[in-house]
Image 1 (cartoon, rainbow, N blue to C red):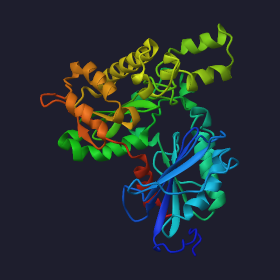
Image 2: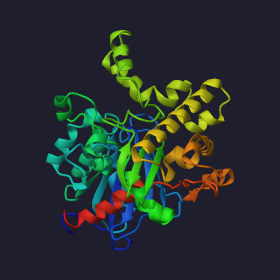
Image 3: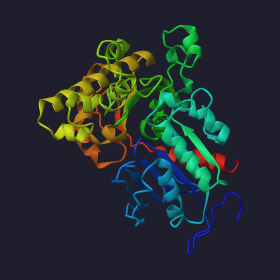
Length: 410
């Protein structure tokens, strides 16, 4: 067995596999891919509600059929590190052959990491300094990386960075109007959801043809939400900024906010920093405005006026910022929806497209309703000047492909 191998599994083909891990604030998505090729994993799953007594783990095979995994002990679900330490040996029982590398989504790469990279302890120390810029995600990604390093010390760990796709922003597009010494400290627009946008960019030629290299606005609408304006499938503008708080209204984050409102909460309302941070990261957005939920499905199903108002504000913010991105690009040649809300909430898509009528976008309502069935679909009317698409995202495939490319050189 080589240094990078975790050992063959009994009664399974002797082939190499790669593991991908996407650590969220209270969950870990995982998948196992053939190391040779393929955008689809042969095993994928979710460890959910980490840090609570209700922590669970589920998995499915390539056909979507459930895979029986042991019940997660309560102690294993206490932290991301303990969850992964328990999960890795379990996954090895289902891996085909050996795990030759692990690929990890890392939300913030700062200025040092603008392409996928093999990460050692020195690199993790650099990434640790970025925790204040992505407090709800960065610590958990680092926990996952360190857990894999302890359980499988010989397996290379590949970091794939959400900020990297936006390294093509111009100096003007990434600058804030702050004193130079503040900018020199790293306060600038980084942008996020880069792995999702990288996948969308890779699919555009198949769906849009020559328009793929034009002025495309991609809308990643999930619990976290942002827009990316691309030209030649490279990021030229985005709504998230220094942290994932900026831009669109989200499930629990406010998006665009006058900084004076934060000062008011601190100075006049007497809130401390921890309280303000909790409000901004956990109690705003759809949850805060509706007072009900951060789940768009629940709000669309509710007849309460607070729910309707939250959806109204969500759509208003999306339309206004699509306009801002179109202005930065000098127009819009295509609009693409992706992620949870973007892929599944047909009423929200409809209202956003209708609000973009001034761009020349016209909706085919039947196609939009049918798009809830999954897969990439055009939802614009035949006479729409701007084609509108729904394209499912696949961050795990982006991680897997980068991990394949780097694992052999590690």
